[in-house]
Image (cartoon, rainbow, N blue to C red; front, side, top):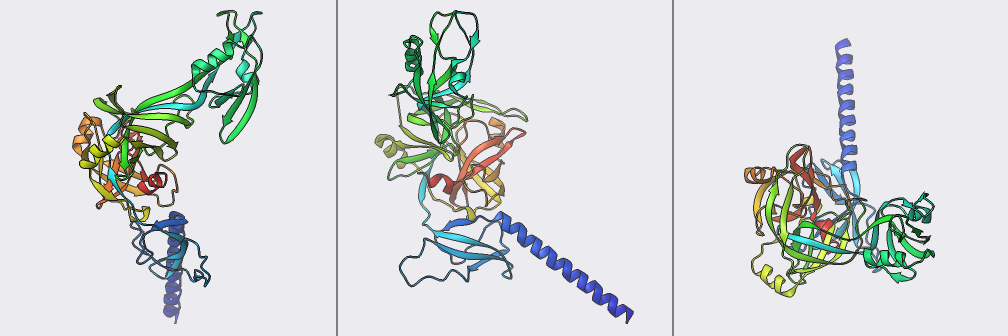
Length: 407
């Protein structure tokens, strides 16, 4: 009798522990799944990285008789088909087909207004030190868009308006985040230069090198970088007034090493242009190819269907990137982890370079490779966005669908 009781108690303890483990696992998967996914069909829908999860239509997702149902359908993911994990909305969408890039391009942007990159004191005629910009309420990172009602397009124009003010207050319209703020700047006569000063440093343009991720062969629209272009001094995303994408030839690679980010270096083709830059978004830079360049690139391109996030899994992959000249090459890589719940972030997965050629040439991922497309199982899954400074063979990547939704 004693042994029987002991056996029953042990069995109950093991069963309880199993249930706790299963429901704990279900809770973990719940945090890893997104609230919304896109798919061409809900039939046999799988999360590639979680094969133990199966999906079925949620009981409450009955379709109304009226012709007013939403675009999404609720499904329930379950652990081993038995323990409900999470209800997820599935939005039906056909996967687009894109031509992959990997080609470097020069970025030349004019800002929408001028960005305040720093504030400084001005020594007035009486010897006192003041900062008119700070007193007006300006902060580092602010965008000055209007001066006395005039649309501002350059540093030079702002300096001229301040110099011609004669000390009279000038009216500013400033963009700070999503808010427009009116300010009044009263210049100070500098005892050093003899001119009227505002006490700030500003920037009206930015230039750099990036990598094209993919383009639409029909429209010529293209996406690159996989992350926004930000001002180096303020860290703020640069608002685009107009921009140009120009051919660039990679002439040198500053090799990355532990604790030191590497860099692609090249020369711009100053007289040529292959397209316009139209948008700077959290998911990358977007533009349109010239007709001539589109025809040239379409004639010799590789096209891949885009993978939705749930199709991406850990394991072998490839990237297209350029470390010499202007022609991309394929290099082997590995998807180390996938964060399906990371939303619109540009850090959706961790990638590791496994191709010894790229490691020998660049140490792995370096600055300028941002936007290099990632291919897995014959599909475009994303683009490289960041390098791990502590280990340049690794970096982050963005889901291709996060970039494609802005194209």
